[in-house]
Length: 261
Image 1: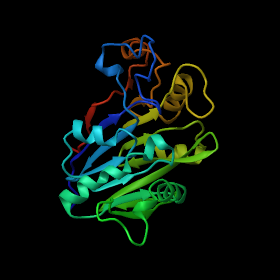
Image 2: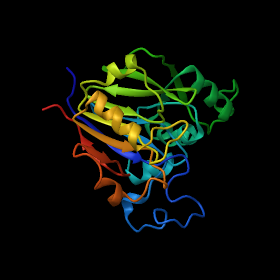
Image 3: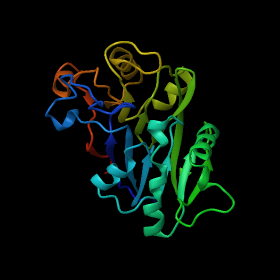
Image 4: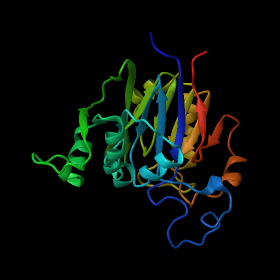
């Protein structure tokens, strides 16, 4: 029987440069509010007594230490950009602790990027200290984490396909600019949704606030959280007070219990 325990923790809610941005003195980057400090976008999913991460970006090690993660079953990848894959080498710590390979769930394009960026992991004669991983190829069809069904949601990041994921009544989508009606149907009826909202101004490959709010209005989740936030968006407090009552700005360390009662 399926265990009902299900929670998520925001590991990072920032865009590719993070917030603060190196050498930037803007009001957001110099803010004293911890909710304005954003690591690269990633999510911890605690599901039926197992932990999974969506994307292992450059801040993966720091995120695992901050949240005191002692066990990790696998990583789901949205796409192959560096801010979503660059920390994969640090799965070694879990290899050593748990004496098992790390399960990686990714598209063919992400697999190619991992093999290119971490070529030493996949060589026939490998060094004993490298990460031990097991690649699980996914496409735009449901797959399973143990007994838990995951529904991929394909969005477009300018011209690059990116996967969002639906687990039960939770949806996580990042790096989206366009989402077809077929893929929107997979989102409808969800209770909690995370969606990227880079800034106020339009961007070539990300939703801005107007586009994110229009998508939320279309698919109608009970609650929506904006993520993948740029320093150009503004301060947390200033943004939050102008959002609809069911829309919230995500922040690093945010925890949500999605347990079925």
